[in-house]
Amino acid sequence: MRSLHTLTPHLVVCGADAAAKWYVDVLGAREHGHRLTAPGGRFMHIELRLGDCEIAIADEFPEWGVVSPLGVGGTASVLELKLDNVRPAWDRAVAAGATVKQPLGEVFWGDLQGQLTDPFGHRWNLSQHLRDVPPLDQQEALDALFASTA
Image 1: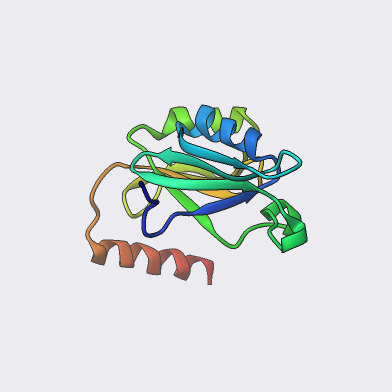
Image 2 (image 1 turned 120 degrees about the vertical axis):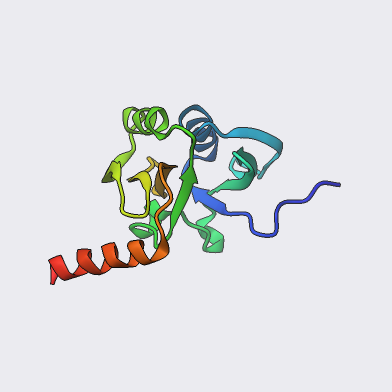
Protein backbone atom coordinates (compact mmCIF):
# COMPACT_ATOMS: atom_id res chain seq x y z
CA MET A 1 0.00 0.00 0.00
CA ARG A 2 1.28 3.47 -0.94
CA SER A 3 1.32 6.27 1.59
CA LEU A 4 1.54 10.04 1.34
CA HIS A 5 4.72 11.92 2.25
CA THR A 6 5.53 12.75 5.85
CA LEU A 7 4.04 16.20 5.28
CA THR A 8 1.33 16.48 2.66
CA PRO A 9 -0.62 19.73 2.33
CA HIS A 10 -4.35 19.08 2.33
CA LEU A 11 -6.04 22.09 0.75
CA VAL A 12 -9.69 22.76 1.43
CA VAL A 13 -11.49 24.45 -1.45
CA CYS A 14 -14.97 25.32 -2.52
CA GLY A 15 -15.30 23.13 -5.61
CA ALA A 16 -12.64 20.40 -5.36
CA ASP A 17 -13.34 18.97 -8.81
CA ALA A 18 -12.86 22.40 -10.44
CA ALA A 19 -9.80 23.06 -8.27
CA ALA A 20 -8.22 19.76 -9.32
CA LYS A 21 -8.74 20.69 -12.95
CA TRP A 22 -7.31 24.22 -12.35
CA TYR A 23 -4.20 22.86 -10.61
CA VAL A 24 -3.66 20.33 -13.43
CA ASP A 25 -4.27 22.78 -16.29
CA VAL A 26 -2.53 25.80 -14.77
CA LEU A 27 0.17 24.55 -12.41
CA GLY A 28 1.00 21.30 -14.17
CA ALA A 29 -0.21 19.00 -11.39
CA ARG A 30 -0.99 15.38 -12.19
CA GLU A 31 -3.90 13.62 -10.58
CA HIS A 32 -3.00 10.25 -9.15
CA GLY A 33 -4.19 7.92 -6.49
CA HIS A 34 -7.86 7.95 -5.88
CA ARG A 35 -10.81 10.20 -5.16
CA LEU A 36 -13.03 9.74 -2.13
CA THR A 37 -16.53 11.07 -2.71
CA ALA A 38 -18.83 11.80 0.20
CA PRO A 39 -22.62 11.48 -0.06
CA GLY A 40 -23.97 14.46 -1.96
CA GLY A 41 -21.02 14.54 -4.36
CA ARG A 42 -18.50 16.53 -2.33
CA PHE A 43 -14.95 15.29 -2.45
CA MET A 44 -13.27 14.28 0.78
CA HIS A 45 -9.96 13.59 -0.95
CA ILE A 46 -8.37 14.12 -4.37
CA GLU A 47 -4.65 13.36 -4.69
CA LEU A 48 -2.45 15.49 -6.92
CA ARG A 49 1.26 15.51 -7.62
CA LEU A 50 3.17 18.76 -8.22
CA GLY A 51 6.72 17.98 -9.24
CA ASP A 52 8.07 15.68 -6.54
CA CYS A 53 5.40 16.64 -3.98
CA GLU A 54 1.93 15.43 -3.24
CA ILE A 55 -1.01 17.55 -2.22
CA ALA A 56 -4.53 16.51 -1.42
CA ILE A 57 -7.59 18.66 -1.91
CA ALA A 58 -11.07 18.41 -0.48
CA ASP A 59 -14.34 20.26 -0.62
CA GLU A 60 -15.57 22.30 2.31
CA PHE A 61 -17.39 20.45 5.09
CA PRO A 62 -18.54 23.38 7.23
CA GLU A 63 -20.63 21.06 9.37
CA TRP A 64 -17.28 19.72 10.65
CA GLY A 65 -15.49 23.07 10.72
CA VAL A 66 -13.59 22.27 7.50
CA VAL A 67 -13.68 25.46 5.45
CA SER A 68 -11.69 26.99 2.63
CA PRO A 69 -9.84 30.32 2.66
CA LEU A 70 -12.85 31.78 0.84
CA GLY A 71 -15.02 30.77 3.79
CA VAL A 72 -12.85 32.52 6.38
CA GLY A 73 -11.71 35.63 4.50
CA GLY A 74 -8.25 34.49 3.39
CA THR A 75 -5.36 32.26 4.30
CA ALA A 76 -2.40 32.64 6.64
CA SER A 77 -0.15 30.39 4.58
CA VAL A 78 1.62 30.56 1.23
CA LEU A 79 2.56 27.56 -0.90
CA GLU A 80 5.81 27.85 -2.85
CA LEU A 81 6.05 26.14 -6.22
CA LYS A 82 9.56 25.98 -7.72
CA LEU A 83 9.55 25.63 -11.48
CA ASP A 84 12.26 25.32 -14.13
CA ASN A 85 10.48 27.98 -16.22
CA VAL A 86 8.07 30.08 -14.18
CA ARG A 87 6.72 32.46 -16.85
CA PRO A 88 4.39 30.05 -18.69
CA ALA A 89 2.79 28.87 -15.43
CA TRP A 90 2.51 32.48 -14.21
CA ASP A 91 0.83 33.56 -17.43
CA ARG A 92 -1.58 30.58 -17.34
CA ALA A 93 -2.48 31.31 -13.71
CA VAL A 94 -3.24 34.97 -14.35
CA ALA A 95 -5.23 34.14 -17.50
CA ALA A 96 -7.17 31.50 -15.53
CA GLY A 97 -8.35 33.91 -12.85
CA ALA A 98 -5.56 34.11 -10.26
CA THR A 99 -5.17 37.45 -8.46
CA VAL A 100 -1.66 38.91 -8.50
CA LYS A 101 -0.45 39.80 -4.99
CA GLN A 102 3.19 40.47 -5.96
CA PRO A 103 4.19 40.78 -9.63
CA LEU A 104 6.67 38.35 -11.09
CA GLY A 105 10.16 39.80 -10.73
CA GLU A 106 13.67 39.05 -9.60
CA VAL A 107 14.07 38.94 -5.81
CA PHE A 108 17.21 39.47 -3.76
CA TRP A 109 17.72 35.79 -2.92
CA GLY A 110 18.24 34.98 -6.61
CA ASP A 111 14.82 33.79 -7.78
CA LEU A 112 12.35 35.05 -10.33
CA GLN A 113 9.23 35.03 -8.18
CA GLY A 114 5.72 36.36 -7.89
CA GLN A 115 2.82 35.72 -5.57
CA LEU A 116 -0.80 35.15 -6.49
CA THR A 117 -4.03 33.91 -5.04
CA ASP A 118 -5.75 31.14 -6.95
CA PRO A 119 -9.52 31.27 -7.57
CA PHE A 120 -10.01 28.99 -4.56
CA GLY A 121 -8.35 31.35 -2.07
CA HIS A 122 -4.93 29.74 -1.69
CA ARG A 123 -1.80 31.89 -2.03
CA TRP A 124 1.12 30.68 -4.11
CA ASN A 125 4.66 31.87 -4.68
CA LEU A 126 5.63 30.74 -8.17
CA SER A 127 9.38 30.88 -8.56
CA GLN A 128 12.35 29.90 -10.67
CA HIS A 129 15.90 29.85 -9.33
CA LEU A 130 18.14 32.17 -11.36
CA ARG A 131 21.36 32.44 -9.37
CA ASP A 132 22.93 31.55 -6.05
CA VAL A 133 23.23 34.44 -3.61
CA PRO A 134 25.42 34.03 -0.52
CA PRO A 135 23.50 34.21 2.78
CA LEU A 136 25.40 37.33 3.92
CA ASP A 137 24.42 39.14 0.71
CA GLN A 138 20.81 38.08 1.22
CA GLN A 139 20.85 39.44 4.78
CA GLU A 140 22.38 42.74 3.65
CA ALA A 141 19.71 43.09 0.96
CA LEU A 142 16.97 42.35 3.50
CA ASP A 143 18.44 44.89 5.95
CA ALA A 144 18.55 47.50 3.18
CA LEU A 145 14.95 46.75 2.20
CA PHE A 146 13.69 47.26 5.74
CA ALA A 147 15.86 50.35 6.22
CA SER A 148 14.27 51.91 3.13
CA THR A 149 10.74 51.35 4.50
CA ALA A 150 11.48 52.70 8.00
